[in-house]
Length: 292
Image (cartoon, rainbow, N blue to C red):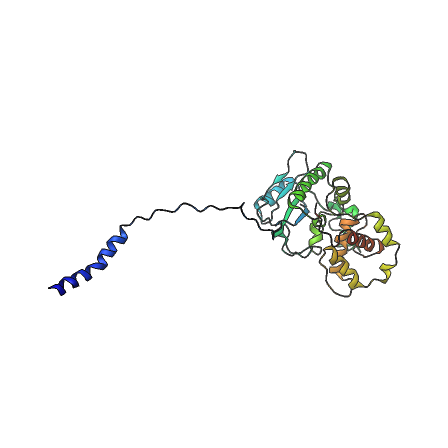
């Protein structure tokens, strides 16, 4: 009988355990606190490294439609009339689709690390848009481009100053679309006022005239090899191939550089003045980590 009682007790243990477990009420724990103040890492940097300026090749209405409903976008849009507004189309924390293939300063996926600014401008004047097809010109000269108006320049100055300060953008990394994609793009074109923005508003990079003249007075240009010159472009930030000739892709880089730093004479041909400007820029900015 004792044996039977013991056996009955053992058989009931699983049942007792099940009943006990299912009836226990486990209190929900309090949410964990995310503490972003007690400890901070030093190994970090700003995600935004580059500001890229574009022109739209359109009027206001078409630019708004394309940049808000199409497959391209930009963080900011500047119209060509004075409505006292700069339009923020994509939050700065999100990725806009404005840069495409290309690269600058060792970075190749610039949509991930840049702010894109579109400026309404027709680009090339209508009468010159087909000029390259039936002429000996390889590149559009200065007079083919459309001017930006004064309100647009002021808006660009205010916006880029603010972005440069907030994200600690290196002066060299305020660039045009052509600078990062010279075989695909020519915007913001020869009439975008890079020099004025630098001298009047401290925006972007520009060479010192004294250094330019110094390098023009040297004979380094005539003695420089093509690989050495191409390396000087890379030192500044441009992507350029390592071929031992000035092929079309290489001349596209020269043209993009001239659009930015010698816009009155953008030819795509490397000459003494272009090389002197490149050398002056590398003297001023190469190896420097100072920001805006």
